[in-house]
Structure formats: C-alpha cells, structure tokens
Length: 255
Ligand SMILES: NC(=O)c1ccc[n+]([C@@H]2O[C@H](COP(=O)([O-])OP(=O)(O)OC[C@H]3O[C@@H](n4cnc5c(N)ncnc54)[C@H](OP(=O)(O)O)[C@@H]3O)[C@@H](O)[C@H]2O)c1
Image (cartoon, rainbow, N blue to C red; front, side):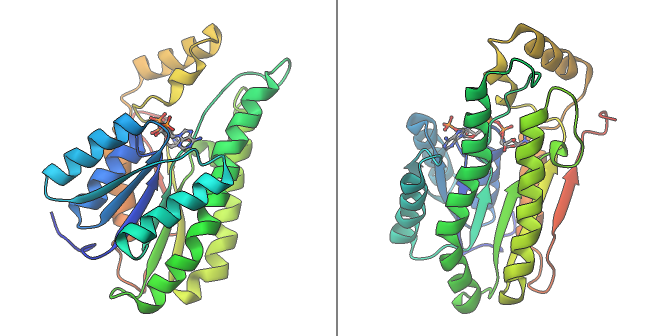
C-alpha cells in the first residue's frame, strides 16, 4: 500500500464499527496515525491493537460527540498525542427511520445530536488545527470528509429526519468548502448508498422498519465498508491542487 499519508494524523469519528473502522484501517495503511473516536471503548482498543500490529499507529479515544466538551476533548487528545491534525473524517451517524406521524421525538433528537451537532462540534474543534496543518505541514493541505448519504441527495417517505440531517450535512459541507478552500483545507462529502454495517440495527424495536431494511439488504448486493474507505482514501490523497467536493458511491445493484 502506498504510504502517501506518512507523517499525517487522521481523526475518524464512529471508528468502532462499519465505515469508520474500515476508513481508519485504510488511512493507517496509507501511513496516517489514526485517532479512533466513538463511545465503545473495547471496540476502539481492539482496532487500535490491530492497526498497531499491522505496523501502523493508532490512538483509541472514547468520546460521545453529542457532548460538545467531549468532541473538543477528543480533538485535543489527538493533537496532544500526535502534535498535529491533517484529516478529519466526520463519519459517526445514526439512522432511525419511520413516519413523521406519531414518531418518537427522542429518535429525532438523537439523530440530530449525532449527525448534525456532533459533526459541527468536532469540525469546529478541529478546524484551527487543520488550517495550521495546511499552512505548515509537509503536504501543505488538509482535509475534512463528511460521510453523508444518498439520503442527502434524495428524500424518501419514512426517512424524514435522517434526510434532514444528511441534506443539512451536504449544505454545510459546501459552505465550509467555500470558506476555507483557498487556505488549502479541502472539504467534501461522501454519499454512500447501501453498505453492510450495523446502521439499520438501531431500528430493531420497530418491526415494520426493520422488515423494510432487511428486505432491502436481502435483495441487494450492497457495498462493503471497505468500498467507502477506498473513497475516503481517494479524496484525501489527491494532489494539493485537486479537491473532491462530492463523491457518490452506490452499489451497482441499487437503483
Ligand atoms: N450503512 C449504510 O448503508 C450507510 C449509507 C449511507 C450513509 N451511511 C453513513 O455512514 C456513517 C457510518 O455509519 P455505518 O453505516 O458505518 O454504521 P455503524 O456501523 O452503526 O457505525 C456508526 C458509528 O457511529 C458511532 N456513533 C454513534 N453515536 C455516536 C456518538 N454519540 N458519539 C460518537 N460516536 C457515535 C458508533 O460508535 P459507538 O456506538 O461506539 O459510539 C459507530 O462507530 C453514518 O454517518 C451513516 O449515516 C451509512
């Protein structure tokens, strides 16, 4: 594996499973020191050990990014340990589906807290370090990749608030891109279609939603988390003058 991120530091939120874990592995293979952020400490510790065993560098950082102080502390812990931050992958997310009518408003609060507020808090804390890396680092460029979704491009009945969060992430990403791109912090969204992860499992208590999700996964040859990790790696390893603002990765089998 080419080591074109050697000497850089990447922070990945939601690194305890699915897309985030695969992305942290992939960036570490490219030579980045990886800060692994999520709530499940055991999973992070296992992944950190795996990355280190393969010759990489990793730091497990237990944090609930819905708490702004914890998001800020996660960034600070990363910079304290590695001295810099070059890449932020805002990946942590929740997808709680169902109709708006009679919805559990707590589901909405939880999704907005992780998908929007958590992403904002982590970005706000990381941005000064990314700007510094772009100014002073050997590569003279830094990156934010926000993991959005096809649900940030297309709305469906039953996806209302998940759609809201991901459309919001897309709008915020493009606004921030324009704000900092001339300072060589590249900001882009990656929008996956269906990926085999734990994402749907948080709907297990809603039989109708669970059934619809199961039926989609049974009938569709979905993506692997590594397919998305490859996309992130592509975005952050472009030459300094090339910024990927949007990458939409779909299963070939998903219309
Ligand atoms: N799977 C798909 O089909 C698909 C499609 C499009 C977009 N996406 C997006 O991809 C991203 C990753 O999801 P995934 O599919 O890989 O699902 P996943 O396996 O459920 O991963 C979600 C990650 O988010 C973390 N997380 C949740 N709440 C958190 C919090 N409060 N603080 C810190 N971390 C938190 C979880 O870790 P802890 O529970 O340990 O905190 C976990 O590592 C999400 O943004 C999702 O919307 C997924």
